[in-house]
Length: 226
Ligand SMILES: [Zn+2]
Ligand SMILES: [Zn+2]
Image 1 (cartoon, rainbow, N blue to C red):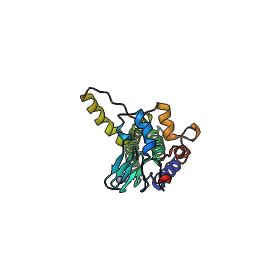
Image 2 (image 1 turned 90 degrees about the horizontal axis):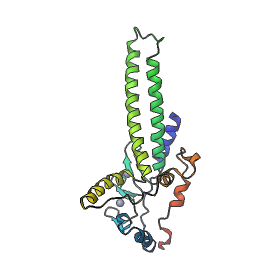
Image 3 (image 1 turned 90 degrees about the vertical axis):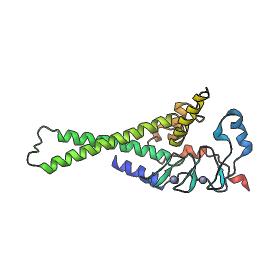
């Protein structure tokens, strides 16, 4: 489990999150179809980044730390010193999943060891402190990773990013104030939302490098500019 954690971590760190290519120009003709389908969809309107001075595709956001626009940006993660975006979101979620399982497993191991009946701790104070500190640390870590995993499972099931979740809370509040209801524009169905992140093949869901489904979804026009 530790090796799987380390492998997912390395994939997260080394995978480019999906920087928007600098000559990106939106396909206005192509954009007419989703605009027709979703007339009030703010995210399908043309957006520009003031800092990069280029067009921003839907769901892309500017990262102040990376100083680039990132496709389907979730957040900038200090622990992996990288943005979590289109290409490494799956690896990030799988990393959190493995880390949660590993922490819970370690917590159970430490606690069950400490409460073993035939284990005599008398006269071994440093050992007691070691078990108490490690146990507390692992339980804390399990709760933290578990909460993060739960939050991201919720986000995946709604096809949302962390940024869109916070934007959605505000949009829902504004919609409620004006007597409307708010619906996240990228929410397809729970199954489609899950497969859009983890891939259509359930056997490859836990592999952080199985990203072929993302290559099929890449339709950002860059080649036709010339
Ligand atoms: Zn930008
Ligand atoms: Zn970043």
